[in-house]
Length: 244
Ligand SMILES: Cc1cc2nc3c(=O)[nH]c(=O)nc-3n(C[C@H](O)[C@H](O)[C@H](O)COP(=O)(O)O)c2cc1C
Image (cartoon, rainbow, N blue to C red; front, side, top):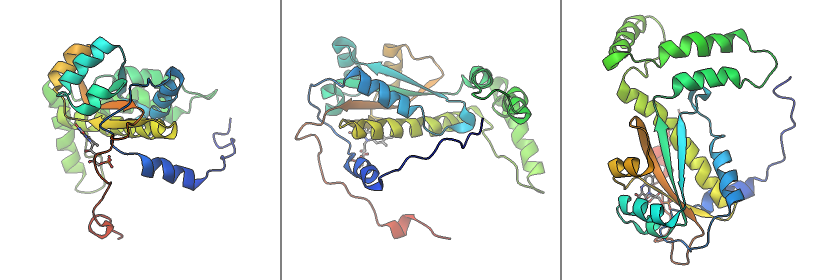
């Protein structure tokens, strides 16, 4: 099968701009629920985010039942967005699923023949690259080897520690969170990403595994009239964008 066989759809950039420009962090929601099919579509679109080595190091914990949601809102420090949203989604980065997901990547390969390079990557390279060993000793050894080899040629500089694995998993997971929020907007719903929460309590409440990192809790729902607190603003591009 030719992976490029499907014709690219016509895209109206103005519709995309509308989605991106009308997304705001909404702090007050109407009580109207998000329909299950909308939620399911947004979650599927979230998982279409680009992610490192297609190892999909994320999980989504969707909370809608009033009692659990109220307790989760409390763990989100009682923020208005969390208290008023009909749905709260804890988006979790996992540093400990890559081994299983490397196997899944092989099992789910969507074409009839598995290219040898893909087989080699998930069977041999990934297990070396992502394994940091007990107490991170393997990572430290790989880093040292990289420092020496890197004198002569470009080499990967990580992830070479448990902390770097946290960054590794969080990068991909944050992209999924953004896809989710844009998808909600495209469906006419809104969101608020939150890092203002008590991670210990959120994990305990939702039964999130010890090594899971709660990247964000996303509040989702229909925006209330007074849901946006201020006009959107950003700093000047010339300070932040560097054309080299
Ligand atoms: C990682 C992250 C954490 C955030 N945490 C919170 C939060 O805890 N509470 C909140 O009200 N907004 C939170 N926000 C929303 C930001 O305040 C908001 O994105 C920013 O002020 C820009 O506004 P806009 O999203 O409407 O463009 C967070 C955003 C991000 C990306």
